[in-house]
Amino acid sequence: MRELVFQCIGSFVGCLGFAFIFRIHRNIEFAYFGALNGLIATIIYLILKPLSNLYLQNFIAMLIAALLAECMARLFKAPATIFITIGCFPLVPGRGIYQTMLYAVQGQSYLFIQSFLQTFGIAMSLALAILVSSTIILLFKKIKAQPDLFFKDPIE
Amino acid sequence: MNELEVLEQISYIGYLLLRYGAEIYRVEESLTKMMKGLGYEDVEVFALPAYFTMSCTLKNKTPYCITKRSSQNRINLDKIYELNNLVRQISNQKIKPENIQEEIIKIVEKPLNYPLILIGYIVSAAFFTLFFGGEAKDMLVAAVSGFILYYAVLIMENLAINSIVRTIVGSMILASISMIAYKISFIHNVEYSIIGALMILTPGMAITNSLRDIVSGDYESGIARMLEALLIAASIAIGVGMIMVIGG
Image 1 (cartoon, helix red, strand yellow):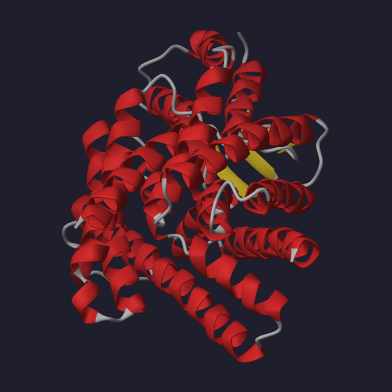
Image 2: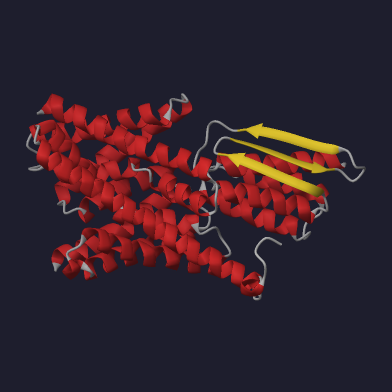
């Protein structure tokens, strides 16, 4: 329990720090909302732990964080990248990079390949989540702009 | 103020967007919207991560084309937001063409708050160490790494060293600080402080932007940035790995 609370605090304050690194100094509310996004991603990741599937956990957490970021972007009339960039950090596989390198240095080839593939897989599932959420938003925008989109010849 | 000067200012906005690390589709869309908003025809814009070209037909029917290149890009989300607002105002004609230059200068000349960036480095290194399961001593070591990393990155950025070398050197610095702290038995496990501090160097922005570019159909830019992200992740691993080999 104590560990979970530490993880939540760590992700929120850590993301706040990243907001400052990426030069969000004047519009401080973006920093808070970006960090909130990171916190929500962490909480979803932890809730989904019973799935015991790292890729699915990362994918769903990132998907929800990215969709939330798009909502925040509409709310503030600001680019969604701001919120996604800050919110994705708790899911970035930092431990995976470290462990992959540790096994490589120790010469444990089997563990090295295993953790390399795992890290790569996590990165790909994050990528897929951003891909899906961006596509959903793009479609949403298009349909909102032209409600009769479905009944037209696409070439014209 | 004549047409050419206005277009010069608009291309400067595009340059700034690239420089502060906006997505490619945002650069293209912003420039197109602004030029169409000001009433130019045959507007074409093509952008790559460090370069863009825009062309249109002036009101007296002469063709106009300008290209700009920006090689040293630094992420600044505050300025992307403000430029985005300015772009919206220009394309909705809420702002007179004469005043564009003034507004751009207002955005560009706002000074950076360096102490806050330093705090960001320290806080995010320390709290990501907590996030990955470290204790108070690990957090302290990571905070020191963040502090030193800030100055190292600042110096290397000012020397215009490329981002791969920068990341390798940065990750070597943070790994050696943790390794020294471990050798003098200040901490019991090098793992947590290294992972916490290396989060600063991870290419989160490049990954996000590359995917958003791919979704909007800019495959060249998307792949270029994806490659950047992969190379940076590999350089982190190389830097940390070198210190692990040396330090045992």
